Amino acid sequence: MDLYSIGELVIDFTPGSEPASYIRNPGGAPANAAITAARSGLEAGVCSSVGDDDFGRFLVRTLEENGVKVLNPDLCGEAITTLAFVTLAPDGDRSFTFARKPGADMFLSEAAVKEADIRDSAIVHAGSCSLSASPAAEATAKALRLGHELGKLVSFDVNYRNVMWKDDQAACAAKVREILSYVDLLKVSDEEVDMMGGESALPALMEELRIAVVVETLGDAGARCFFAGETWDVASHKVTCVDTNGAGDAFWGAFLSSLRIQGVDRTEQLTKEIVSRAMAYGNAAGGLTVQKKGAIPALPTRAEIEAFLAR
Image (cartoon, rainbow, N blue to C red; front, side, top):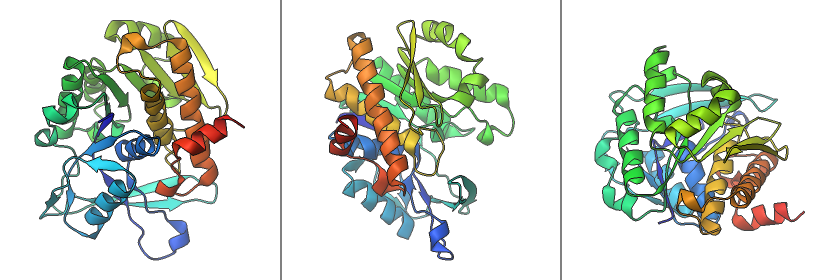
């Protein structure tokens, strides 16, 4: 298995009224990144459990149809699916209203993290959704720590916002720092870089925590890469961490896919040429996702990415 993608699985639910104003998008960051990787020709898996209801079954089916192996497909008697009502504004922005089912826990559990699955993978990726003031943060840290100890490439798409921490920014920052100690490849937004002390603080952080690559998404300005003491930008496509089409997730799934396509499975194999190609590949995937719009159907295939780059 090339990619082991860890995190909660969330369904954006179409309420039925005004269908044109809503999208139905199962996954969240871990699943969207895994689907992009699978469509790029890699074997990918998502670790989670889902509720034994229409939404849970829809989620598992959608992932499997897109080539993603659901590592823990057991449907729970009490549905643990979260319904996210996502309103699309005319300008493409979206607002969230989360409706948790009574007694539900949508997050990853430590029991779902299997060492055998991680041992069989080449890259271990966690989406930012798993970072919360709950056992999920511990489970995510455990999975990334296992990947690190087993010598796998470890990827993390951080969400530094402390929504789940009830305004305890210090606790959120401490958990982020713990997780980063296991991370080789880090994806952040420009806002999150500001919360980490700005771009000037990144070189020292990377050296201290031995992070090989940091990729900063810059909205309409594209993306910026920090690697081996150098910084460079890539072409402008809308590749944000939070947008209507999951472009940031597509970006990172394709970035990781490019590393595997180029035969990389250890940090010492990384070169500027390899990372630059992965940046271009990921940015093309993000650009395609924005152009195509929609949800899961907008996530690109390897052929579409390569055709985009060849234009």
